[in-house]
Length: 346
Image 1 (cartoon, rainbow, N blue to C red):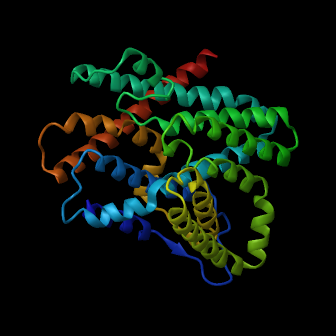
Image 2: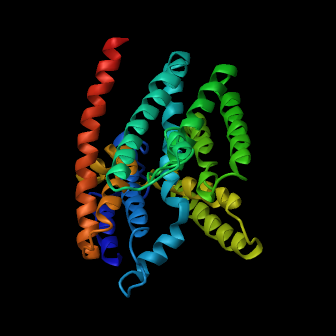
């Protein structure tokens, strides 16, 4: 898997730009830019999931294993941060009209697409004679369990969207609503802590951080644009604090997965500050970002289907990647058609 890190590095560099001293990106959180960042993370998530179906004890797997171990759950930080940031920006622009639409346009839409993907896993399992308990299969459509698919992120983001809707409906003051959401999210992650594995709660604080960053973003942006020297030191300080917190927590706590929210939040701040000075983006990252939901939820289908064929690992990885991308495009075309029919019905 070491060799597959090379394309990731190339994609970061291709089309990248560093703004000179005294200059900042006029649109640091433009959709094209955040999509590219999420696209890179989509590739890293694909690599991680692929590694779960391979034996990574070879001489050419050690660098990948080390990088993957270092990044841990940080690879989903942009997803959570930009989800919180993006939905809040829409609320600030459109007000209560947008808040009222969240259950239908965000939650129900994502859940429907997710349920369709889970159905594909059920059909694949039936074809391969892979058995799951009926209750486990039923709960998989909620995201609480799985039938071979990835599930925790979808369940979590749907809950966070509902909490966002609730907070901004109950509290009309924007700043107070953002802090209310942070409280709701804290309660949710406290509740799921005893029942789930670490990824369910170890980066949860990043979503409300994205919400707060959107609420206070104009003040932050104005400060950095007046003096761009704040951007790089701010990113560096967040990065060093994040690494320091990882080392400290790893030294003093046997199980510090819940405390991983601290370095995850610092990683998000580091990324946010860097986006004022660094721009990434190209057609490949844009594709990966555009189809990140479909790639995330469908990638295990070919991984499972091809895993018992005895292929060379490199053939297996490339075939799974090609099949995932094809499935993502076809699935998006189908769900776009379905969404159009539903809108027409309403």
